[in-house]
Image 1 (tube, rainbow, N blue to C red):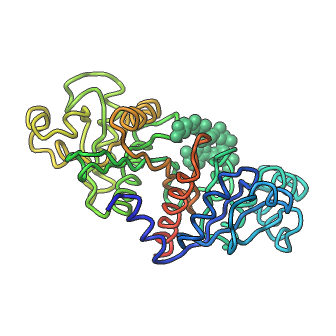
Image 2: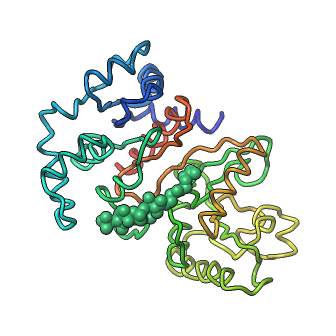
Length: 330
Ligand code: ACO
């Protein structure tokens, strides 16, 4: 079964409620039709009657709950929650109301925060990450949210039969050893949840086991030490070059006796540039499926879309968000 079909099956088995705030975009409704028809999630769509009527033309969204942000009996509850969460940042009720009406992603995050939805997906037109960081914050004990891609490489025996987690590909431009160690732990959890196999985390560099000396190599080697101390139950090793991480014959030469080298399925990149470029290389040159970016470390599941996404991508991200919501409820 293709990776995404396993996710659809899991989402359908315990339906969660996901908010889609982008009623100004027709792709939302194309995706909503499929999600509702196939029973992947319950949906709340935020929009005015005019936005809904205009952009849902031709799509059957029977079963979706529509919330008009200008005429919602729950609105005051969300304004109050916004102020409670952001009063220290100077947010007043008037500012909260204005922000929620201007950017429905704020509305969506508040619905999640108040327990009226299990997760949210947006980003086809606007800003997803900042409202989620501001209002939902990280899980307890987590300092930074990061973003991974679940990569499905066709005809590939490496990783878990071609399945990998790549991170951080989406969020943190400024990584240090502590943050990198945390990305390793979060990515291991994400791999285990989405793939259902034991994660083997390679901390990537241009050096393997000290073959090069440079401050960026030291940064990754330090991250490995921190990860091994803080998360002794997770198989994390490095610093490793990509070939040593993936290919058993190269691993035997460059990192013999490693518990990860030659069998890595979770790749932690040393910078956002490397992660972002790396996933796109594999997606474009190996024609791999790239599911994400999926945010990890947030207190509730909220996920971003690429502005160039297709309706089918939105369906996939909604299903992954629903699976994260199932995990959060365990
Ligand atoms: N984890 C947790 N909280 C965070 C993080 C993080 N990684 N980054 C910022 N925050 C918090 C801040 O502490 C702040 O909290 P506060 O308002 O309560 O004080 C809040 O989020 C907002 O912070 P800002 O300063 O407004 O946001 P910032 O300027 O740091 O931007 C952002 C955050 C948007 C994630 C930024 O780091 C960014 O643009 N990252 C790169 C995103 C990107 O371009 N990715 C590549 C494209 S995606 C793709 O190709 C798939």
